[in-house]
Length: 561
Image (cartoon, rainbow, N blue to C red; front, top):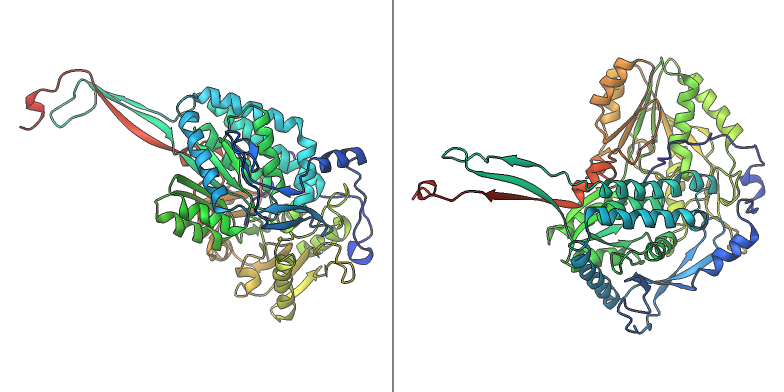
């Protein structure tokens, strides 16, 4: 499930050493935000988070008509570090979904025909500037809602989201259209006095289904290219992290985005299912989620031939060769497993190390983790390892799943616990606190165990040894997933050779998870299909029309009759 760290100038993983969370409890000093800033941000949070349709909350329709607000169904959104309630989130009714789709469809008719590429670029640039002006507020909501350490949110999540909007604004302002023309169109009877050209046109109403690990970046990877192409976007954020999506929709409206161009509808998974299944007006669905979610969306979309982009799970391999710079290899393995609390779909959770350097690698890995890991409240600046996500209806479900993988691996004689493995749950008496998992490393004797085969989506690394390049590539490719792969080597020829041989949509050489917005991010195999980012996303949010223009007259001899 979900995304990756893409900021280009990443800070060092190392942080000041502090007492371990598992010994003393959670740090609670919010040193990054002043008390007045916290009070300001919290004052903007409504007690009931509702859908945002036509640039207004669900209590008012975009035309100004009153909407009866008698829906008492909601769920509680909690802060993962503390378990404390942030707000209630309304579950939309069918009539709310009807209004949202109708608003998006109505807006599409004018947005797609009455604005040029350049004008849409100006709208997006204004939205990016508005986001930038409210960056610290967005950092607060993103961090407190997701549990990701504030330093990682500040240096990655928010800048990359804004960068995505600016990138597609620039493409649109350049009237980027991927069009082509052909003069003197060939014909069975010879060349005719005609020419052909193509038009790249929008699809219509698009549905974005977001992830909870990179809430805002996932959103902008979908919203920005969709809007640039002339589509409208109906966005359904993850039920675990709905707050930044709603706030950004407000900021887009404040920046001048026309009503209905971006609508946000929070809700549980069945809200997304209903939108995919029951509304043929929606012509495109983009999902960042689990394999099961993606398969369900693909099946439901087929009934009305909706186009889909699916970015799903992963079990990515990192191959560390004998000639690699060992210190760098250790740093890449740590970053590629434990950043974002270990909750990244493209993480290199299968680490294959050449047998001749395995001992040294593990020794340095453990030493680095002992020196650098600071677990605690994710709003504390020194924290680099926060809690796992806390799903609203079953707060312990994700923790239970990750802990289950660890507990079973501890009992498996083919696995040796090298580091970590400890967990902490909320206080039994008060119920306060989050679900924390210490960075965990197992050395595994075989690939034929669930810890090596299945996506954990938590801070758990499996380390295996290999003897030859051919063996390493074969084992790396022996997975149903194909989202990412990596190679640590100082041999340029080997790097290029393996970049070709590894079956994955993204291959990193001597680094991990760097994905510039200009480059496509896409999966192979059961990790999904379709690309986010780059010009390739434009292709996924548009359709190509061929136009042939006859300059002369059509003679009878040209008709075969």
